[in-house]
Length: 192
Image (cartoon, rainbow, N blue to C red; front, top):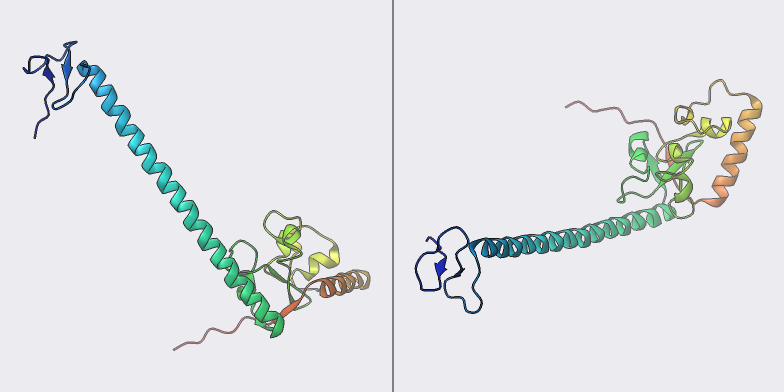
């Protein structure tokens, strides 16, 4: 159905500068340009309101999902503190602090510890020791290194002094953070 602008006497208005009113409207007469601007402004405000509402709903939903995942992760960590389990390197890698579904864990000399409560600022994303999270970074501790390439479990080539440094770190970390598991080699893939 075509919408037409009408002049004050009810006939179709010319497109340029003729005073007109919207069909069924009361009040002051508007030019076609003024009506177009008004309708455009109304459409823009409706679109902006829809966008703002959608963003707000998305933010609420995202916050809910993150909180839900953190609660699941916290429940998992509490259970693991009571009953530690074995982790493969690929399983431990999920606990590097980037996914709220998994708490922040690291391994030292094969023992997996939970650092999410007291150590997130150090071992979490953006922290100075972030490369130790989700893996056994014993060599980096022994070398007192912040290099990601040193964050490995292989201790080959370390001196006695470096191994003592690692033992000191391990003792401090084991006292501070709860044990949640033991690191084991990857399980061989089964063929069917």
